[in-house]
Length: 604
Image (cartoon, rainbow, N blue to C red; front, side, top):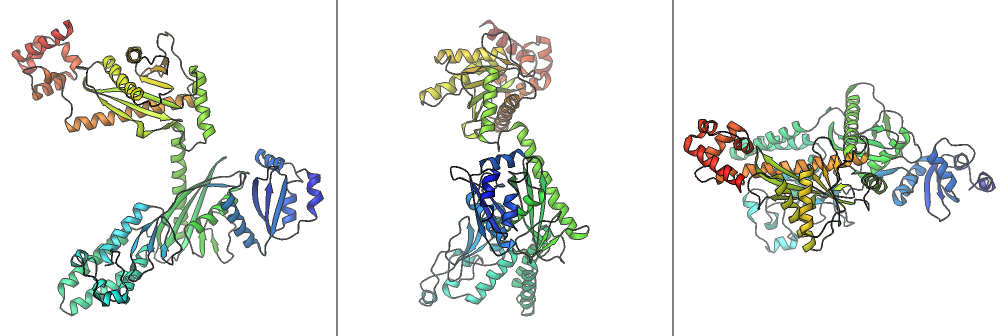
């Protein structure tokens, strides 16, 4: 839509609050916006030159616009957020948070059960939450069950069924975890009081529950029921201990929400703290992608609207680092300068900065979180540098691991589309190689891996990396020759220290640019195979799975082998020692056995 085309329809757009929608030539929704004055806001897109490439690109694509008049700015705000969430237009802020969050449901039934769920049904049940951590929810439910006896069975506890005596109490009753409503041993009023205590616990309001338990404890004591009074005292101790573990900012604060933001050129991060009764009961950080160079205030305002809706916040006060626009005019906006509220804001800022830094670190060596185009671009770059026939969307890497010249194992890691495919990782206990022989070990594991893939008709990788020098690479190629797989995939060796890449039968190595994403990916794969191999190796050693080569010598036991390794550090070093040097550690007769073993192996 050109400026002239807009001028032709401008008179039809009212000077009233509302939302506007931009569509492209194929009728795809590009952008949804809100406005105090629809005509002034929409005309701004066609009456000035934008410095932002993204905004310029949007205007170039606009083919037609639609608008909806509403009664107030707040209604426009609500409608805008609803439409963005529903249609996710290309040029609107993208909230990268597609998780499903757990709820605690109070089932609509006689003597309601409580349990964890991720799905809400319109069945009249009460859903508390959502909560950001399922682990935290399970911890809460287990804590509640310890101190508030609620049923866990699925019996249909209608009044008529109970009066007819259809049910008998189960083990939970005898353990004290249930008061037996199934036999009419607990009134519905008493049960519902327990449900209310559970609600208070979930909201961080432990004070009312503690007060009730104190009254019950004193009643038991005054009635000479000292065992029950002692049980109540222990419950009180645990509740007060649990309360102490909660992050309590101030008992004088009411319910409020705290938001902070970190924004760079391409991404924004918003942290949210839900505070109830002075206690932080929820904390969550989301990632957003601004599309039209929106300000921090605009991004934060968008995030607040979504987070409050997601977590069902009813707080009437919001703490933020600067002024923002919010949906509800009754909400108080606070920008604290000191005191408990400033401490909360500082804590939120600390969380959002930490989250952003962790994401940044991951992106240095990982491709997780990148778009498909970014992932493929790295693989295309690697294809170009290594002159591969196709992009290496499937990469496998092998590495050998041993300890002090003994206990040889191998590991293989698999990366697909530049991302670690953990389910395809493999580790190998060496079967056919005696002693430490990196070349023979590499040949064995490469043979075993690709023998399995060909037998099971599974896809072969485009690129195989052998972590080691030319010797290991040559051994790997021998295995592939025996399998008739030479030429089916590209195999390269990766020098341990120099990060040089070797091709079979080529004397010159390839060095990738030190700052390239390709080299970062290769490093990532190498580090991962080291980590995976060392972890497996350590586990095998701790289980005593390995048998030292020295122990295979007839007349040499485990203790003798251990003494030799302590003295000479590795089997390789032991092979170079003289009879006199060995005799000083294990005696003459065993020294002769060791020398005879190694001399025989060298001759053969």
